[in-house]
Image (cartoon, rainbow, N blue to C red; front, side, top):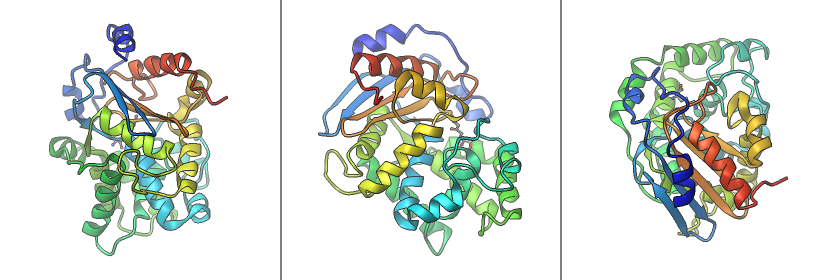
Length: 298
Ligand code: DON
């Protein structure tokens, strides 16, 4: 891990996200890596204890929790599992698909997924998400209030997407409340050590690799990994699968988690992003480790 870290630490490509003002304060040199195996052992290098907001990586785990509660067929019917071929915050993708969301890994499908979270009140729905993501990590995850406030002040586009979905009958609850809840799930703080364990839980059929606790079923883990493989890296998912050969999910704070089913997971944090919103060092270092460790599934 140390060697991989030093191979890519000097790479100076990409830009730190700035459309959420607080994220622009990230240090572009931050670079952390953690590999976690399904037996619970972890190997880290660099800034593996630096906390950052989980952002879109939360989509995969909230989707897992919603699949577990709502069921495979209904979620597939209501959210979809195909790549949009368009950016993560595309409105056109909704219009081109007769008002339906196409998958849970882009904002439209993620907002629709969050609208399906069980709970009678918004507090209960938040508790479901917070407890569920914390169970994946094996520790109580904390909200980054500054990132949350910063995104709440600038998330008009997500609010518009939620309203558009409501107009098409695909969000049945208050779109402003869904957008707020989604923004909160994106603002949970994690480290690469957390993310690698969260990914290793999916690699392990939904059972936490350290505690053995069942967070979601093996069938749900399989569903989440397939949709991560087709759409986890947005319009660049084909390039990712071609180079890396495993399901992955990125977030705009610079996190990226990759899952090797049955084996474990690799999490990387490095804020500079490419045009699709994926961590540049994350892509290079993951491709290197996938080749070196022979992890490509194909
Ligand atoms: O909704 C947003 O725009 C952010 N909260 C999350 C987007 C994101 O992480 C895209 N990923 N690379």
